[in-house]
Length: 356
Image 1 (tube, rainbow, N blue to C red):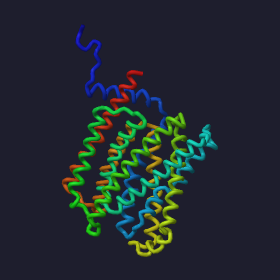
Image 2 (image 1 turned 120 degrees about the vertical axis):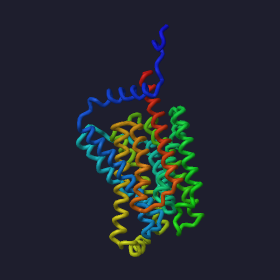
Image 3 (image 1 turned 30 degrees about the vertical axis):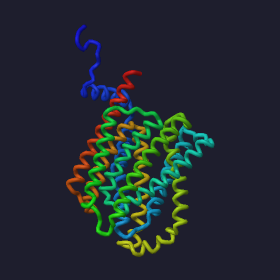
Image 4 (image 1 turned 90 degrees about the horizontal axis):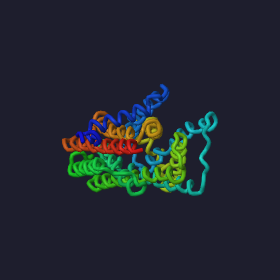
């Protein structure tokens, strides 16, 4: 038998070539409108999400103090997604997904978890620089992979496991370098709690991602753009309800007036920061949803990898965040971990396509 006559090559080049062929075959007949919408969605992810993170840090550094208000702002923009969803019912062929008891219960549970997740991240950004918080939040990929493996039975290969180890190492480096970027007004206890809340928020984010995928598989049975938007609207709505209850019980709506008066830049700056925080967060969510539908989870993973350094570098330039050698090393290692995960995900997609 001649060498290489029947045994397929497993080289990196062959996998990249196969993936490129699959991608080209899938998208070569897409209309120009598809690419315009995809470009806008990518821009939304790479601009809106970092902007939302920076605005959260601006809120705290300029005199804001409420964690509940920032959590509430994250979901207060849910009507924006609803306004985009509704025309698909009136002017398109789409129809609302029948709302069963199990589906309603899943929306309520995911909404509650989303509210808790936003609150954890609010505590993290209150005590950590935006660049540090963004790097720690990248650990959500680790938890998404693990939760997806145990709950949805997604596959994990060697490259994905390698990515989990690498990103975990990057988080450890940040922990060892905690003294270099702590604000003077933040105590050691608050900094540690910010670190813990960020990791816990990332873990919960990974769980929410896996549970959302489980809802699509078990309860919806289909995955179209308007169905994804439906879930986003309903989860954000119930997250808004739970967060509003928290704000009311904590009397933070009453405290907004005094916060606005003492806010650096005055009341108008206070309102602008909160309004744009809500808008940018929803635009980022919409962009991510569109990328998942128009492209793939791999593309969404690539963009998540890119927006981490964008947020960190933007925080250093615009907010003058401290950037130590350890943090730069952690940033590079995190990007390496993302790349390893994306390659592993791409290889799994290629092998599944070749065996089908």
